[in-house]
Amino acid sequence: MNLLIDDGNLGLCVEQHPLSAIAERFGTPCYVYSKAAIVDAFEQYRNAFGDRDHLILYAVKANSNIAILKLLADMGSGFDIVSGGELARVLAAGAAPSKIVFSGVGKSVSEIQRALEVGIHCFNVESAPELERLSQLAHAAGKTANISLRVNPDVDAKTHPYISTGLRQDKFGVPHESALDLYRRARELPGLRITGIDCHIGSQLTQTAPFAAALARVLALADAMRADGIEIEHLDLGGGLGIRYQAEEHPPSIADYVRTLVGGMGNRACRIMVEPGRSMVGNAGVLLTRVEYVKPTPDRCFVIVDAAMNDLVRPALYDAWHDIRPVMRATAGEERLCQVVGPVCESGDFIGRDRMLNVAASDLLAVMSAGAYGMSMSSNYNSRPRAAEVMVDGDRAHLIRERETIDDLFAHESFLP
Ligand SMILES: *Cc1c(COP(=O)(O)O)cnc(C)c1O
Image (cartoon, rainbow, N blue to C red; front, top):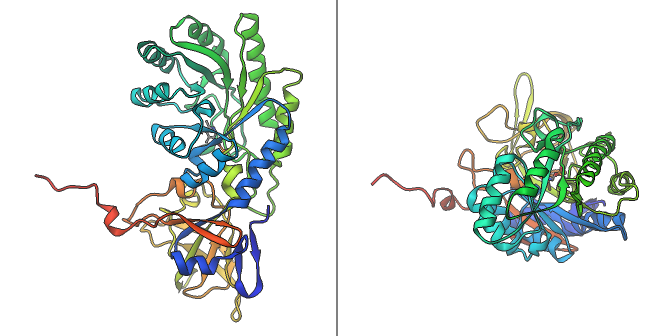
């Protein structure tokens, strides 16, 4: 789905709304999302599964704004959450508890209790001690928790090490060779009902082969479990499908990815669940920022913008590449090699290195593919208020999160008595 349209005089538009008008009305830095692009991604998933029994669980951590969660909930999406905070968000957005799964290696007592009270669809259990804790808490509350074990299939996702989660050395899940024993243990424990197997091997995968390899491992486990008398109702194959950040990247399409999973299942009837985050929202958003200064130094030319690593940490954290486009076409001057950096006091605070740009102070830039792991990973580092978020629907723009104020920054702090 083409999110950005270059409308000559009006410059870059999200759907039919000019980014320059959004900067005028809401200020910068500002995240801008296209409603149509999110709807389109969800429909691609839904259409790819067709009549196949499935459940799409949006991974909330990719972008947790409640307007986005509500949009997805209204289309019938379920949710993959990793904290009590995310549970509260999806409930506020109208999610059905029967479509919520809870992942994460460190679920606290209070988070588990709340999820039991709400009656979520499934706990994706990541360790033996978590299984014991969940059993005790469910039993004490007189509830039965549906569980799947998150299996670590020891498959190389061929992605950045910080977002690879399915290798033996990673902190996630239960080693696949010990999963059967832990399922046997789960069968003995009170308060638990085994409903599935879960697996998530990493993020921003650009090939289907690692997904197929992980699925094969999970299916072998399902077969071993059946031989042992443990039947499952669903396979949760996680998220991880990559998106295109650069023109030369060619991640599989949503349809190809789903075809790989459905094909790999063969004639097994059990329900497939997926937990897409990035591929649902990543290319549905841009970070709109304004140039504060152009600063030539003897070695390099710095373009200092009003967005920084506290707004978009991916370049600093993963050395990630985001395309950067001027909102208006330049009428004079020439492109030159630029370092696009923010105001934060860290040399790691860059948005884009070595970019050919023709920009001047006060120009607007669109940092592309910023819909996932942008706002949700933002912070107040350097006491910078968090950016505003806007959603465009056709020719209208709606504020979905106010810009933080300076007062917000220390509203919860106090002096010593
Ligand atoms: C982060 C995460 C996802 C989503 O991954 P994407 O790469 O954004 O699709 C899904 N499931 C789990 C358990 C995760 O931690």
